[in-house]
Image 1 (cartoon, one colour):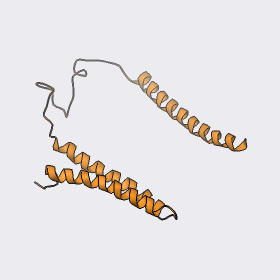
Image 2: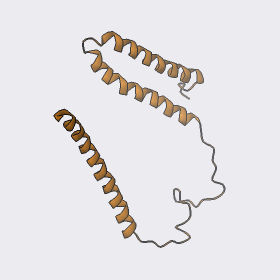
Image 3: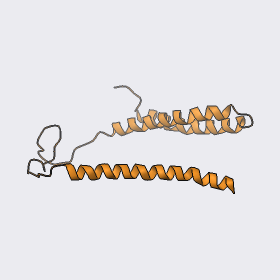
Length: 126
């Protein structure tokens, strides 16, 4: 019975911390709303970007290559996130062969993503 109480007590600390965090954010936003001056003018209601008045339509063409670079970054970031914990589990006895096979499957998926990027010409420097 004591073990279950200790288990739920650890979750109550996390729950209390979450409630305190939400209250802190709510109080900060409430204080900002109460203390800020509210004087709407036509100039303040205009869309502002880089000090230039908006002219024309709001639609603009976006280069797709930036999304591909972000995709490549995610591939390598996820790779590094999973490699470090894997190295610690791999060192423990009894988990060596299983974790080795799982890591090669994971690296295979990453290699497919990298091969796809290479085929699309993303990795060529222009």
